[in-house]
Length: 166
Length: 128
Image 1 (cartoon, chains in turn green, orange):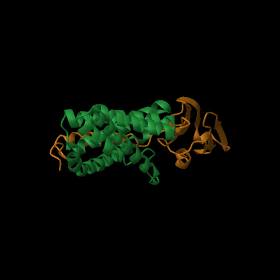
Image 2: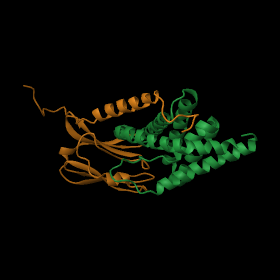
Image 3: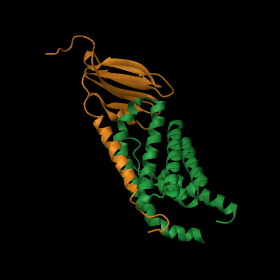
Image 4: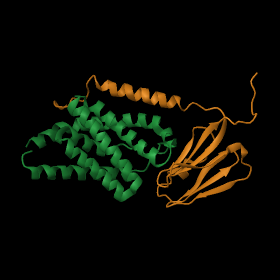
């Protein structure tokens, strides 16, 4: 991407896409028996693409946009949890994809786990260590959702890279 | 698949092994704890009330005032969050807690109720 204007606009589009995906996901009814906070993480497809193919700072900007949106629509607790989870998982995904050369599945699962870990840490600080009770389930669900979003990105990447190359 | 980022590399297994170890360790910690089930009620990270479930004889409600108020129902042998002003009502839907290790948390109200297994200091048991 040559001009910086184009670059900023592209980051903005990605942030909007991530926000819309998390909004859509929130509209889905919660699955009975699932612990609170268990989500598919559709918007993480966008976060991962940004971290892998666009750059570190744009990816952090997308995470901040998601956090701000959660803060505006679902309150300060959700905003803090989303921001912490988004920033930490973006950092992990960027490290694994760009620096440590992991595959999409590994990076995606690690990102989902990092997201859950940061959210639990914030929940723990805000309430009590009782929330750690959810940790084992979140680890399993996080790994599963990470594999799914990793697969989705694997399918989407080749056409996206063609687009970006123009 | 993309040439730049392969879907899977062998080192990805590291992540999955780590996840399996974490989940395994977590589930082990769920093993039932010994001792009398005791409700610990916390608001803003501070303990408000601690009561042994078997010592409750009359149903009692406990109202935790705050930006978001929460009503907790203490009954013989169980405790539940009866009402919360929060939007998601996850804590209310958690239902009654009876066994050590269970918990109901209202994140927006920063209220947590959990059951711990407490070994009481009285003469409740003996060694043979």
